[in-house]
Length: 194
Image (cartoon, rainbow, N blue to C red):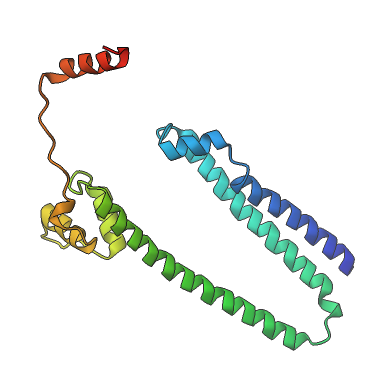
């Protein structure tokens, strides 16, 4: 195959890859983004289906882009005079990209831990009410549940790791006066302006 043919095929692969990436990221319907942000339709399977479709489009888009760039590289391979120098530079770029990725990964995990701490320090949260989420938070922070540990002890260790003090406790829930009927009538009166 001629080098110009490889370049054209590579450019076509790039166009397909860019379209798939853009479709998965940019062309999301704004209504759906707003609904996801405010938690509307959270029980809908559409969100999961769209997420799966977006993920598949990203993977296929990257495959097409990489294939296109490789084909363009092979198309120009005959014109390169210093093959070994170019290979060493390309390997160096790949190593630099890998190191940048690792640094970014470490930074993002540390940032996420900091954001978790800030969030829970600003917003009281009942960790013992949702133990699955508490365990996820604990695992991410490096707090492993011990074999004979009580729920209260584990929650206390997660809270300590988050830097939470007793003042960050959930406020006590006030008992309802008048039952649900009284509250419903009161809310109905507020809605009708009475």
